[in-house]
Length: 327
Image (cartoon, rainbow, N blue to C red; front, side, top):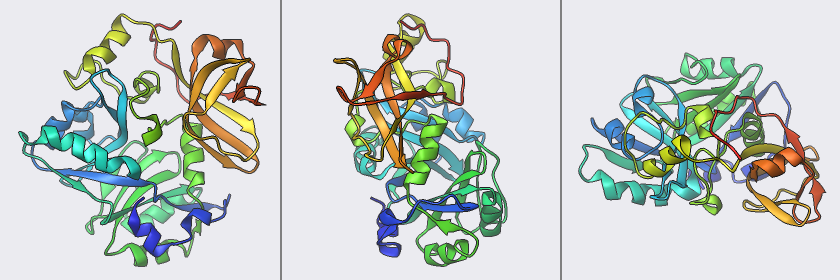
């Protein structure tokens, strides 16, 4: 967990859900891995699925660091503000990701830093979110872009009227007090509900090394480049795209009830296990989830959460899926 929020908001996990005009969402389960140095983008270009030439142009993109087998070890949201490349990922994954990358960084002019004790992450969403961001930073990023103010605070446009902010420990208390004048603090589940609705899959530790980036729909979000050159696991990822068939992929589902299933919980068709929960959150008596499900089972329907469990309803994803060959 990002320790800054635990100091400022010891009861943050129990904050109530809200549908107010502007939601302030502390994100203690996310953290920043910061890279500085002239070869940072070049280094990450050889480590991750994302095309960091696009990040250098100012885009905010998802991506993954894969194993040699082409499975996702660590997922992230990448951006560049000022002189820093920033990878936003689950706080529980950051130490392992840092250790993994440091093994390869010794030959590059880049420095990697765990920012869990220096930068707190915050979501802002709602009708007046852009005004909140503008009041704090003096400007607002467009969706898919990031910016930084002269005090080192940064903001990224994640979706319509939804922003991800990084605030330094030196100003967090004062900034949080200012934001609460026109916004309402709410639980982190509000952020994950929005991520699930957007079809953005985050890989937590329980799902590490289980799924390929295509199965997580990362190509549909520009999180995979097939023409950027080599990176760890690239041969397997490219082979699936050019010569293989995608037997399963990420789908958005919903079930009645407020009991949130654990990552890795089974999706069933009758007594046959046909999928796995990647992430889930519950709000207002409904549980939304993203799950990897076999394509044939998804098409047939009749899925349940757990064997003989509650019926699952399929919900649409807000983006078009790429044309990988499926079966």
